[in-house]
Every structure is written in structure tokens, then in C-alpha cells.
Length: 373
Ligand code: SAH
Ligand code: SF4
Image 1 (cartoon, helix red, strand yellow):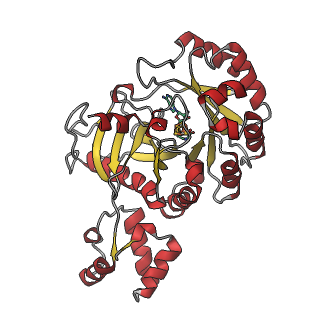
Image 2 (cartoon, helix red, strand yellow):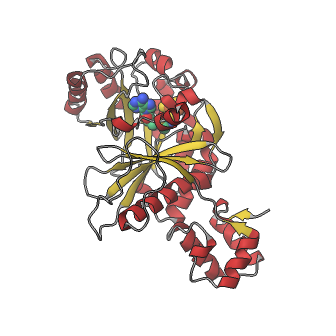
Image 3 (spheres, rainbow, N blue to C red):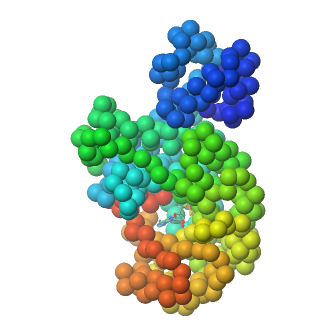
């Protein structure tokens, strides 16, 4: 059976190449082709001899995600639906940064579906299909980097896409400008800490092999306390985001069943004990649900909960899953009033507008829409 080179850790890759009688610098060349120059096949590795490439082809292969669908929103957000080797599908979302043209944050998935079952979340409705492998997590970054590079060079027409908001044929950016993924967030499908080993291996590849700074990577959890503690122990230490979404156990139990296992007190204690590097903060995400968690009292309780933690808060007005459902975003004035209380208490609080509303950019929605077709 052929070996997927991207499935190997750096050490394993050196070992594999050594066994095939190759020198160290050859492995370094291959690492660079895989993770920096983003080669999708051995044919692209043009500075390796044809004989060597033929040899490699006999014993190894390079995994690639298959792009099934790509949608672009009016606000520049793009969604990618990818197929995995076993036919399962995942999605990644590319969000333009507020500062800087052509700079993006990529939101990636860590599982196919999710078992946590949060009431407000589309991914929850899929249930858990399976964990992603580390290489499938990293392949999302590689695939999107390749796709946006092709689009900006104008060399290759945008692949696929039968309907909906098609990606424009013309590259939107000026010639010479290279689009760049500056930040990576684990906020797509899945609960990263329910797949800790593969996620931590992916983090190592992103930092060690692809060259991303730990400061540019954020892992978001629904509040799996042992995962928070383990993340605090691995090097390099990446950023932590916690989806808090409620200020009392009563409400949190109702919308996030994980709270029954790890209640607020325990969760906040783990956050307090997380080794936040100097000048860094924990991000607390707070999906705002009308009449559920959006009162002034909630805001005041949130201030209390976070006191003493270097934190910032992202308020995310709920992106409704279906119009007939019980959950809705509050009015804009309610969100602003809530934000004001936090700001007055000295907590940096940003309202995250739902990006890509016209292409169902809430987590899990592209996949769900695709399935429904
Ligand atoms: N499982 C992890 C990471 C993925 S979810 C976690 O829960 O943190 C990423 C974020 O999307 C979470 O903060 C979650 O609260 C938010 N989210 C999920 N569904 C949403 C919706 N319909 N509208 C707005 N935000 C949503
Ligand atoms: Fe899973 Fe996060 Fe969605 Fe909750 S919000 S169901 S943890 S993906």
C-alpha cells in the first residue's frame, strides 16, 4: 500500500525517506514542496529528478481534498465544501480581514459533524460522522491557499460551481497583489478537543512545517475542560477561544449540553489557569440569542465571570438555522446595549457581524444546504 506523505510527521517523513535510501536534503526539499510550495502531485516537484519522482510514485502519494463547491458572498467571505477520501464532506470558510486588502482568516473544521449538540448550531444537526486526521485538517489550509493563489494569478479559471453565487471569473485583486491567509481559526465544523491528538499534530504541522506563528492560530472550544488544560501544556502555545454563550448554568445547560459535564465554574477556573502568554488574551465567543442570554443582567454577570482573566469578547448575533425555529438574534440596539456594559467594565468587546449571510456562512450551513439539494 502506498504511503500518504502528508500523513507522516516530520520525523516519520525523514525516516521514510532514509529507508528509501534518500539523503536528508531530499526530505527537506519534499517538505518544502508539500507545505510551502503546496504541490498536489510529484509531477509538480520539478527540481527532483524524473527517476526520483517515479520512485516516489511507486511507494507514496500526496493526499488532496476535492473541491465540491465554492461560494463567494457579497462581503468577500468564501465558503469551500471539500470531499474527503471516503466521500465525507467538510467545509472551510475564508473571511477577509478588516484591515488589509487580500488578507484573510481561514476557518477550518476539525471533525465531520459534531457530537456536542449545541441547540443553536447547524453542525450539531449532522451529529458526529468521524474525526478528521491531522493531514485532513492541514489539507484545508493547503487547498484554500492553492485555490486563492490560482485565482489571483488568473492562470486557472475558478474550478467547478454549478449554481448560486459563483466566484467571479475575473480575479478581484489588482495584478501583483498576493492574497494571504494570515490567521487560522478552528471554528468550522467540529469540537477540536474531541479530536485532540489529530488537532495537536495539525497544530505542529501548521507551525513547524507551514511556518504559521502560534500567535496567528486560535482553537475554539465549547468548553471541554480537560482539552483546555492539555492545550495549555503543548508547545507551541496557540490562542484559546471559548464559546461561552451563557452566564448561568441553567441557560447554558439548555443550549449547550456539554455544560452538564463541565459547568461554568469549572470552565472559568480552567480559563483562569490557562497559561496565557503576556499581552495575549482568551477570546470568549458569545452567540446572542433573543430572550435567552441577552439581558443587561447577563452582561453584568459576564463581566463578573471574566473578572481577572485577560479576555476579549466576540458577540455573535445568532445566525438562524431556519425561520420557523425558536432561536433568533436580538435587535441591534439590544446587542449594542449589551456591548456597552462590557465595554464600560473595560472588556474589549467586538460585535461579529454574521459574515457571508447570503451564502449561509454559519457553521455547518454549506454542508447542510449541499445535502439538501
Ligand atoms: N466547536 C467549537 C468550534 C466550532 S463552532 C466551538 O463550539 O467553539 C464556532 C463558533 O460558532 C462557536 O463560537 C459557536 O458558538 C458559533 N456558532 C455556532 N452556530 C452558530 C450560529 N447559528 N450563529 C452564530 N454563531 C454560531
Ligand atoms: Fe459542536 Fe461547536 Fe457546533 Fe457546539 S457550537 S455543536 S461544539 S461545532
